[in-house]
Length: 299
Image (cartoon, rainbow, N blue to C red; front, side):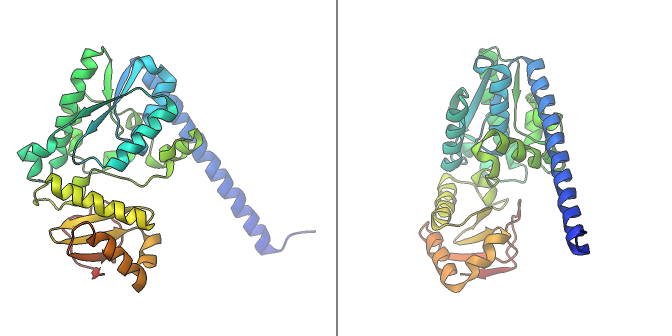
């Protein structure tokens, strides 16, 4: 007995989707094998470890490929580094027995960084690699690496110049691993960050040209933490505009939190961090959104 036309079409679509998923998985696994070969060819690595999706995956693969005695994950802690990210980094390290060292970085007190120019990240990464490279030399570790992935190569990333100047390598990008690949492979490995929203440094919430200060970064961190505690999921940003907080939510969350009773809850959570005014950006979350004030609704 033949299936009705619509059912046959649906079955074919499911089969095609399954084949596509299988092909993507096979491609990602091939790239992971290339990553393991890349790491073993170097012999030992020091990883700039933030606890984000990319560096967590890289650290988990590196400790498996090289052994704990031939790798070190270093966390650079500063006012621009969220506490929640640090907690995730420690969780991943504990789960996979990744050797970790924590160091302090002081980019916020560099006037060039604090002035918040468009190449702010260059000064941040320069501070980081100036701290990490000597550790690698001291420990006789062959190379220093970061979590830059293949997708990042098409982005504006002034921090990449600092990496080049310090001979920092990017193995994920070198073998063609994309963010989607890394999430897929992280999920297969049981790495908790596989579904974690992207979380750049807190300074990315401050418009270029507005001074970065520890107090402002702390205010942003408290506000975003209050939203997470309220139950806001997905990608979110609290953009700093002096007394105004501009809130960006992912598409799935935006409509939910525009409801009057929920928007009042959201505004109260943000005001608890010290902002006088709260605006929900009706365009939703946009990575790298700065200096944009149109299209917002006050809550």
